[in-house]
Image (cartoon, rainbow, N blue to C red; front, side, top):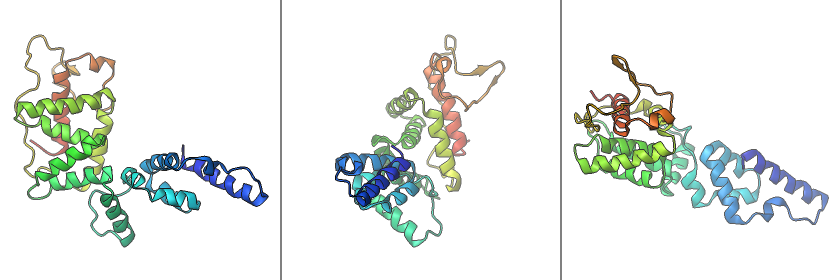
Length: 251
């Protein structure tokens, strides 16, 4: 359900009240938990729509104050690092952190892990928490960090996270969103190093992934189509690691 649909419902409520209708307004017919779910979906797409909903009617205003809505609200319009945030923006972001907003958790993990000049390993735990709550970009970053590890057990864990994204066909989409958010973040601060060990150990029978004659071409405009899925999985993640190394200036 969209924000526009919610506005229509509220307007319908007001018209019925003016006409003296005894019928129950549509918005009143919705159980509160369902209304909260609907508003949370709207908020997850745009915090601007969440603001507009607040001034629509009292029922919406009350529902927007639910902690579940605050955990889901989108922060897409906010930069990763605020150099001079105004009071309202700071108040809004602080409240998101207070309610453990998933996007806020993910951003906190990025800032902590890649904090210049020395990242904080605690940031990895925060990224993991956001990942386990279902945040796709956090899953991408956390999974790829594990794939960079020299520890085979950690690399296996990373594979599981990346397989989840691949099954959902959102590896490329998640990577692009991460890249967009990282514009103002210091890269290559020593927290990540290039793993020289290939995930694929096969040299003769491997079908490879997007291999061109005489040259390895990195493509980023597909998200695991049928041909890609049928190729070697480990080559697929070797391929993705190259994107990840470029993303964080790891040479």
